[in-house]
Each structure stands twice: as C-alpha cells, then as structure tokens.
Image (cartoon, rainbow, N blue to C red; front, side):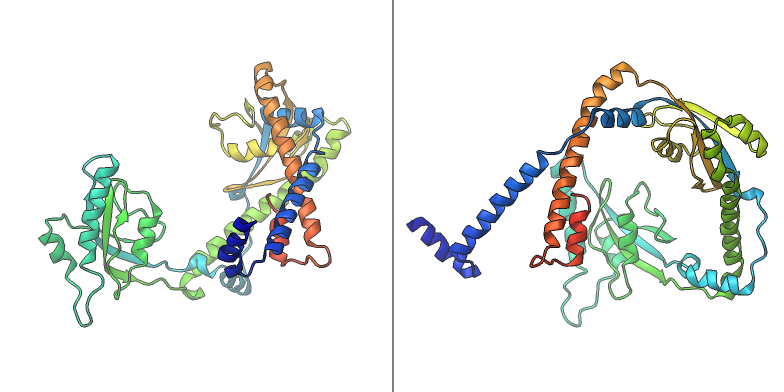
Length: 373
C-alpha cells in the first residue's frame, strides 16, 4: 500500500530497515508472545504449595533462642603476620575519611505549594549563576560578600565526613555528598534541594582522606582482628551442639534435655506470625522472623551471626492460621505463586533459546535472563 511505502521511505530506510525486515521482526514478536503465552498457560500451583506458604508466613509461632555471646570468648594474641594480612585486606576500614567544612545559604520556600518552591528555586539559581560561567580572567566573586549583599544568613557546617548529617534539619545524604565533591577550584555548589527549599554550599576547608599505615592504625587493627576472632569462636562453639541437635530431635530426644546436657540457656520469645506487619520488640527480631519461615516445627536453625555473636532458633510449634487471615491471604498467595511459576517458565525458555547455536548472546545477557524476570 502507498501508506506503507511512504512509511518505509521516510522512517525505515533512513535507519537501514527494509519492509521485509520489519515484517520478520513483527512476525518474530507475535510468534514469541504466542509461544510465551502458551508456555505460561501450563503453569500450575498445587493446593499444598499455597497452604505451606500460608503457614510459613501467617501461622503464629512459638520459638526459643540460644545465644552465643562473643564477649564471653577470649581471643588469642595475633601474630605480626596476622595483623599485617588483616590490615592489608581491610585498608579502607582503617582509612581516615575526607573531612570538609562549608558555609552555606538557604533559600526557603514561602509555602508548601509548588509555586512557592519554584520561586525559591529561581532565587537560588539567580544567586548561584554569578559564580559560574565566568569570563576568562575574571575572578570568582567572594561568596560571603555576595551572601551579605543579598541579605542572606551565612551559616557554617563542619568539619564532617561522608557518614555525617551536618545540615540542621536535613537527613538527605546527597547534601553531604555534594559538599564533599567541592574542590578549591570549584568551591561553590549548584542550588541543592532541601527539606524547606534550596541550599547553596561554599567550600571553606577540605582535608583529603588517606590510608593509614599499619603502625599508625595498630591499636584499631588489633581490636578489630580480636573482634572477628571472638565472632569466629562463637560460631565454632555453636557447631558442636547444632551439628547433632536436629538428628537427636528426629530420634525423639527432648529439646530441653539437649540444651541442659550442653550447658546452654534458652530464651522464649513472644509468639508472632512472621508476616505480621506489627513491630517485634525482642532482640534480633528481624533475623529470627526470617529464620522461622524456613523451618519445620521441632527443628533448630543453623548459627545466625549477630552484632554481638550469634544465635540459633528452636521452633517449638506453629499454631493454626486464623480463619479470617487464611481467607484473606490464601488467594493472594496462590496468585503470587502462579505468577512466579509463569515467569520462571518464560525465563527458562528464553535462557535456553539464547544459548542455542546461532543465538549466542553475551554472558551478561544470559545471566540477566536467568535473573528476576
């Protein structure tokens, strides 16, 4: 048809695309969609799968926790070679971070509406413009003098590092990052969004970060090495008990007897449902919440590393899912599992197709296909 010929001449040809090639591309797209649709339609979820997922997430659980406190272990004295190797592998952890001090002015919005914020941005832009696009040989204006001339309040923040929040009332790390990007040759920032309007920063002092040699950081290196050693000792102490506990529980041994024989102490945590949105107040609640979703009743978990050592969770029992919760959540879980199964089928087919002779794709593309679909 004439319309297609014009489309081909004006749009396809300049891009090196012929009409036949377009037809092939459309045919391939339609065929692929039909194949993927047919393949996805074979996905199925068995009722017990959804029920198991429901129970793992929404059934209230009763659990006990055993803890191994790293502080209870005495680490050995590290050798000079061990300290040297540890320092070399973790140089950045012992580095002195860059620190800077800035002065800044604020352009607050007169109100919370978009128009007020726009006007504040225009004022901030007008102020910053005088520090940029300078003619060759023209000196950069004095920031303090220009702020005073504009009747702006000049404030100072610092010295601070990348992990600090030096600007009062501001928690956005992008502000700190912008300050640390300033240099003596480029000391004025663009106008930066803040909670109440905009900020403009001016570098006063910059102390570059640097790596510290071992002799300078010796005390911290040794303390960190011993901290890691304590955590490893806590891990090792747990293994003697955990490697045999599940076998003995499966043979009918009582949990209380195993704990007593090992000289350990357990702590009961309040009953909770892992998927319940309400905050849990006991220590390491989020770790424990995640662990119990992978467990059966009358089992003990592997060692779970914590900030102070580690723990293991014993799942005493799962209580029935409340009827109203099951009625609300089971259909959602069935739909979620079905969609996951469909996506997995499509992803597997595409990954297999990509690896066929003549369809070789870069490894990164194949890995992407095998990742989340």
